[in-house]
Image 1 (cartoon, helix red, strand yellow):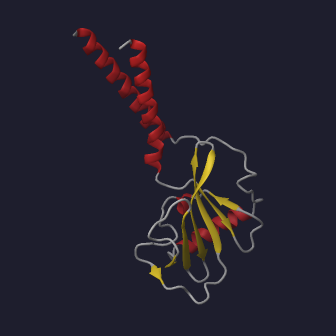
Image 2: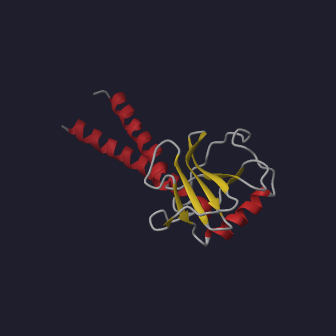
Image 3: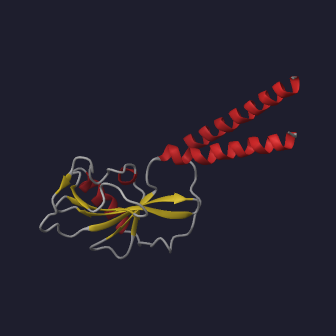
Length: 183
């Protein structure tokens, strides 16, 4: 095998490692979009307290409940992650802060055992939700189509992991090359 082919294979392996690290390290949504009463369009929120966990609004394991007779006014929430320069909707739910209920519509392009069910909302989320919504609703809301496409910047931890993986691949390649040429 020529040295150029080996280098290309090493670089391809490094590229695979570097691009897969952010997917496994993140484990959270990039932002949520909210529509509902009193909002003039779609409000997007990146607050980590609302995007960091799948169970932010309700514990789908333990909080299942019967459909309420009158849930009140609710907000439709779509949770997004970025894939390259585009946004992908992961799932959709309805949150009713006044009565403390969540209806989980479900995963956008799939299904789960939580789909189409009612849940009791996490009581601590109401204050966080209303605070984040008040901050964002005060500024002009933009829809996803109106927002400029921007490349997300990797976190410092992701950069360190990617650089470490790249250096490890290069050292492994150099060691392997030396070992092959010594034989």
